[in-house]
Image 1: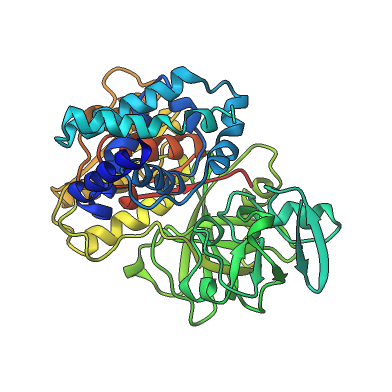
Image 2: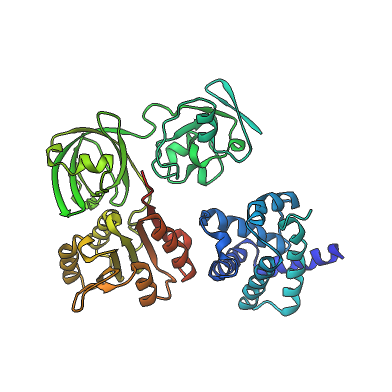
Length: 130
Length: 323
């Protein structure tokens, strides 16, 4: 199952135009996340340029491109936010913003569901439940 | 725990600690200042250049490639062998105070004459070291085109502050200082003529903005330039006449002074400079943005202007961290 979705995802990664298009998606996505009052307090005080780099790595992964970090990285990277109350509702909001970003870019609902499913695979690690 | 070598000895510290904190806690006196990656006083050198962007943010290419890094912005697990910086890693210049005057009751204008060879871009900053070792960072307010071996600072006085007490005394004219730098990337790029510029600042954040603004106008920048300068009170604003004069001479430059509370009939707008800017200019796509001054304003400006469409790489910020 995971293997077949990977194949579709790599199609999406290429379909979107590879690294260049991911940059454009990161830009839209990060703007949406920062403007979203449900979750933007978790981004206060962070170095925005560094954070944009992390968003890019994340989106590259959920589009089926090269994945540069592990579940353990996701867990460690969010532990301080979980301690501040990061929970499923915040994770849902991020996935929602991701979906809205892709919709803006003209991606089909079917592919958006697949991206959301792949993003979903990081939920337990991000929320420190692994 | 992570372990690295410092000047030949071993230093260990918990993962995530900064190199600077690890060294101080293990009893190594490392000179430092703002702990925010701005003043470059805690500069150290690694045997090879560091990859992490934040570790070398704002350093010149020659410093970066020679392995220098900001020890307050680098985590212990990112380094292996660390040394004190090479001699003259940040250039030093002999300087003398040549002018002292008040721009407002709380802002002092200082002018320094520097040793031959000093060059800078308006909007950069330097670290000033007094003979007794007291150090502070100040932005250069002199436009690049006026560069004549002298640079100007606009310094806000903090009642009771150690440096403020010194700087409010006109008899410092003639004092000999050492200037380190220049540093910083909050400058006017010559290839940005087509870009509208938005400048948002409060208090003496105007100092670097004044330099950048004059650089842009001197270069004949054809696209619109809008400056919002705020203060809590109208009396806290300074350089109003100079800025109004510039806006009369340059139709593409709009100056918007603002204050938290203004009297009726005032030419000042009421409100926060960032809020007013975003109200007037809600779409910043294609803009180049400058924001300098209080950290809370500057960091919010970076975020809000980005959300409003400005490209992150075209938002120049200079946050005046408490020193």
